[in-house]
Length: 117
Image 1 (cartoon, one colour):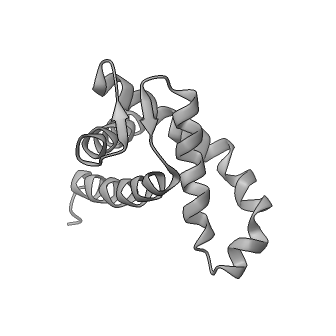
Image 2: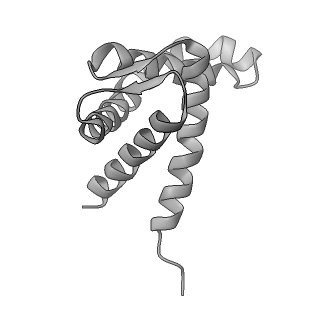
Image 3: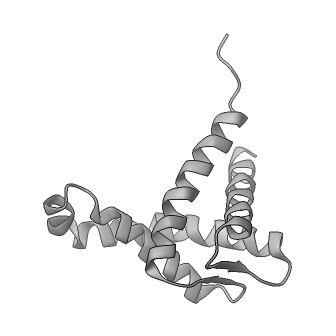
């Protein structure tokens, strides 16, 4: 159940960013597309991202980890290619989308947590 709630929160974050960020578009039934984007991004982060991180480890070390922003943007651009109703206009928009998505997901997930007693 917790996984479904996290996916729905991620979909909400994608939906909000697509509304406010120019260059990111959702078409069709926008929230259903946002849910699909959240699921596909989760799967890509589990399966593809570790492989990309290993292959790009030398450049990641040279850039002190900043190249991971590019890896995240490439994952988002791959999701753009896989999902018909989701489009990102450029790699710069994908980098900004990646950073803002991470921040918004952190905020939404922290609102979901129960306070410690």
